[in-house]
Amino acid sequence: MTRRGYDALDEELKQLKTEARPAVIRDIAEARAHGDLSENAEYHAAREKQGFIEGRIKELEGVISLAEVIDPAKLSGSVKFGATVQLVDEDSDEKKTYQIVGEVEANIEAGLLNIRSPLARALIGKNEGESVDVATPGGLRSYEILSVRYL
Image (cartoon, rainbow, N blue to C red; front, top):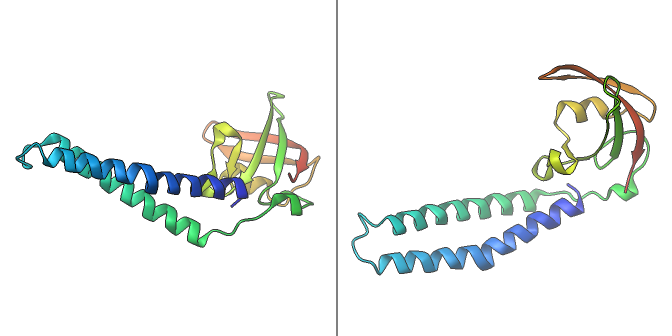
C-alpha cells in the first residue's frame, strides 16, 4: 500500500481506540443505568456499535500488521503498483487520471484505482502511448495511456 493509504488507516485506528471506543463504553454504562437490559434499546444499540468498533479495530490492526508500504516516487517504467496513469477513453475522448493502489485504500471517486480491478489489471505492464481494452459492465472500453508518472 502507499504511505498515504497506510497513514489513513493508522489514523482511523487511533481515532477508534482513543475516541470511539471510550465513547461507546460510556454509552453502555449510561444505558445500563436506565435499568432492565432486556428491553433497553439504547443498551442494545450501544452494544451493537461496540461490536462494530471492535471488529473494525481488529481488521485495521490485521491490515496494518501485514502492510508493505511502497513509495511510488522510487519507481519508474511501465505501469505497476503506485503509478499515476492518465488515460483517454478512445470512444468519448474523456480523460481520466488514476493512481493504482492496494485494495484497502481504493476509492474510485478519488481517483484511487484498486490494483485488482479489471482496468488496473489491463494497465499493468503497459507503457505510454499503448492502448488497452477493458471488459466493463457497459461493454468493451478502449483506453489510450497518455502518461505514466510515479509521484
